[in-house]
Length: 620
View 1: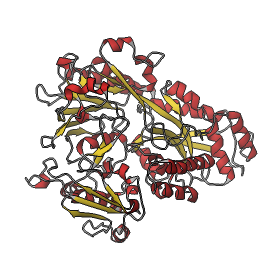
View 2: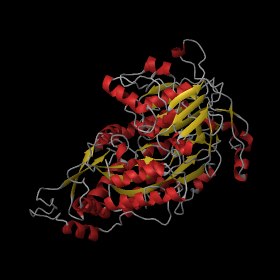
View 3: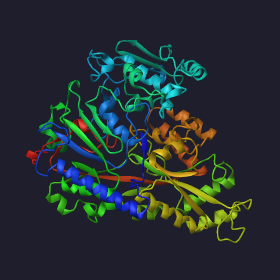
View 4: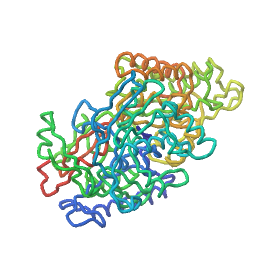
């Protein structure tokens, strides 16, 4: 699960700069088209003749490629091609099924959910690197133990420390020593985190935690080699620009914020395209069954922040698939949401799903204006949530490609309750009445509401300098003006806002979170008090909620855990640390020469399963 930039950024702060950026993007499209003729095999700069190259695009720049150090979605797309966790999801199976990846079997869980034992597959090797001094380096249980200790290392400041923090038997003493001495001792034994032998890992938890299985499927739990970290790590212990994993691809080149090129890992272990069980999948993927993976030679990723040039690049054949920007959905979809005839005639196909993600606006609960747990502060947040015109957000900004959020857990994620709706209704009249009742009235006659003590009330919303965020800013401003509340905006680039949000420096921000491990916990942990400074940007810390959250982790998926989720949803509604916005619908356009692509809620870019074959477009 990762931070999701819901702005679809387009960094243009003024009209002249907008023109400059747009012209630059068009030049980039032209360059892509020159590299990728519509009717011939894809070639990227420096690629061998005849190489099978997949061309894709990111709408937001990456931050780096260290699975224990990053938290943004686009860096994670690359990391998942380079690093591997013990478990993942069956690529073709629906509903989604967790399966062993680098493990020999599913984990053995004993002592009521406290003890987890896992076995690593022998014969898996890291990609060759000078850190290994010319020797083939086999993956072992110790590599996973080392990677998981990195999550606990205070110096790392890992955004996913909460996966294991406070949960591992014997870890607290080692962490305390690191806090005192400034250095984490990776050789210090931790009773609850051990490699029992070369291929066996055992985790002992202080209390049962059935969510751990989901974490084991995600990239922060992927193995890294200690030799690589010690050779290339920076002062934080991060290795952002020299990723070395066991995965199907390796980093070939990286121009920050512009282009990332991955190349096939020649030493990748023997993995094959799976056998399909569903009749439709057998017809679609039958010819790929048993093919050795990856089938591609390279993946060429371009960072293109503006939506129009992305669509131009796809329409020209320069991109092999693209997520359709919602604001341009009418370019490819008809009024019923089906692919337009012009695209069908070209052999383009449409894949779509409701993402396992939530877009929401959070209120900083430690902020002196919008924070706090007293009735007047709750009333203020409730009124602001009721004032925001979510129907217009869906209709105008998302062009209908979103659903109103009813609860923290999105549809199709375990724990979602179709009968539950705790979202604040769009009701400006009720919002005005609520503000009046609690003393948020215009005391000085300037036309704007003031705080109950008479001081001016000016709210501050963080926002990226993107086209979409500017549209949403205008909607927020218009919505709050209708109830007499003034709002200003903090405009910064996405990575800068992430840092500010984590540090509690933003009063309000509209952000998103996407689930990578098929658990409702992914969303409720965002409000757990123990995750303040990591993923809990709202800095919500309610003892009752915290207790329910801890209880939920001790239960396996099922009705009892769902009851706790419902109670937590009701507390979210009662205290309003969030304004629930939308669940997004993602539409992906796929060129006719792309084979093996199946849209996956938990793996947006499954490059290892994809092939490109322009010379045989009919064989998909």
